[in-house]
Amino acid sequence: MIQAIGLTSTTRKARPPAVDDVSFEAHAGRVTALVGAPGAGKTTALRLMLELQQGRGITYFRGRPLHRIAHPSREVGVLLGEVPGHPARTVRGQLSMLCAATGVPVRRADEVLEVVGLVSFRDEGLGTLSRGMDRRLGLACALLSDPHTLVLDDPTDGLSVREGRWLHGILRAHATRGGTVLFATDDAKEAARTADRVVTLDQGRLVADQEASEFARTRLRPRVAVRSPHAARLGSLLTKEARTAQRSVEVVREEGNRLSVYGSTCADVGETAFRHGILVHQLADETGDMGPVPIEPPSAEAGPRPTDSEPQPTDAEGLSTGAEGPADGASPADAAAVDDPSAALPPPIAVRQTRSPLRPLRYELRRAGGVGTGYFTAAAVLVSSVLLSVFLARIGHTPQPRLLAAWPRELPLPPAALGAGLLGAVSFGEEFRHPALAADRGTVPRRLGLLAAKLLVASVTALMLAFLTVGCDLEMLYLVYGRELTGVPSDWLSLSASWSGLVVGCAWAGVLAAGVFRSTAAGLAAVLAVPVVVVPLVQKALKGPSVRSAAGFPERLRELVLMQWPFGGERYLAAAVRVLAQPVGGALLLSLTALLCTYLLTTLRSRVR
Image (cartoon, rainbow, N blue to C red):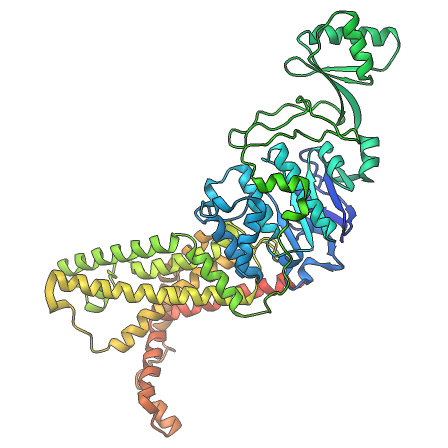
């Protein structure tokens, strides 16, 4: 069950809080609806419950707050707004990535796609999905890890009437299995029709917590829906007769030829129309809300949506149930789910994968390989490096090491280092721009396992990019100028160490800065700040009188340990020391240390609550 206690959002200046001291419960095995007009605070309340927004109060999911649950995504399935994913990622790629994050088999993605009717759209990009398809994918993401609790914000937005019935059938089947369901909606009729208990918010405050039947009796009122080509005349007659008979009848003229008559019955309205010879096209009892609602234009991509102005048949309880005809985009599975929703639920996960350090690595690999950003960046780096290297060779006066790296003295960093830093910044910046792990402990889970996976993948990517850059530059220089500029330098070992350290350091700086500042642009700015800001400071510090040279380090090292290092190990140590003694190397080390300490500090602070 869910226990929300004292939820209160933070305020700015003298503004009232969007949610003020809201407490309620959602029991297991039941469907609970959170109802309120737009701006009542429903979404804010859900975000406070999921710890996605700063505020006071606490929410327990089966007796534990979300930050105390080892794997929150396995406990709570979430649908808030649009599906948070890169627009270029495919539907199945998004689900496969989340399978790796939650530790469930990848075949689970196909199972939930079958349930929500998106099998034929598995290779479509997220950016091409309509609103209704996006809601289906959101439900698939919520059901992916077979959670006990479902928390959904306006889940039927963009769905047709039949699709809405299908979705609520899925939610009802999940509750029948013993799960907890909480969904927010603006439609009071939908809440009364589909929920077991209704929690009503108004201007951020809790105004009612009732059973659905009590909610329908006290907060909804019956009305008569009338359609007539002489609606204006019929409305005047109804008002006149009610005034004469001293009865409380309210007649509301809506768009077109429709009337909503409150406080009367179909029999009374029909008799009035018959006595005055007024043609009536439709006469039906409905359960309305607290008054007429404005009619919104239908969405072009989602198709026309039902409104209060459209007559609908009623069920045994007197609540509008929606049309029975098939809707656009409805699949055979949807039709079966309307009659037997439990048959369409994905099967329970019998065996879950154990805790493994490779799970964050699998997630990161699928995240990085699921979109073309990395491939386009690598291609741009290789092309720019080749062109720059040929141009530098033509004008001359460029040392061969810088020629092979395509690094003119006028640029703070070579293209390969900039590309590695950009890929590193994207790897963490995308988590904040497209928070696919939003339900997993905050906007982005600050776990060291995820950080280690990103650093490892960024390092391998940077080394591959550095190797390909040098190889392509060598090949192009050989094709254009012959063997004159393609000789191997004598100090290739230290140069290779410096080159590898430079690109890996830039990639790590991008990852850490994007994780600290929650932005890809901030990560790339931190990479550029190393040669532009930090290097001059390091150079100035190294010119001081207290700085000693690292010359003769291997000899002093041998004198210290009184033994010969095997396989010439002192050469590798000397190369590493020379790399760190360089201004760029020292600046990178300093920047990485500062960023890592900042990241760890924010991680510890987020865990102490």
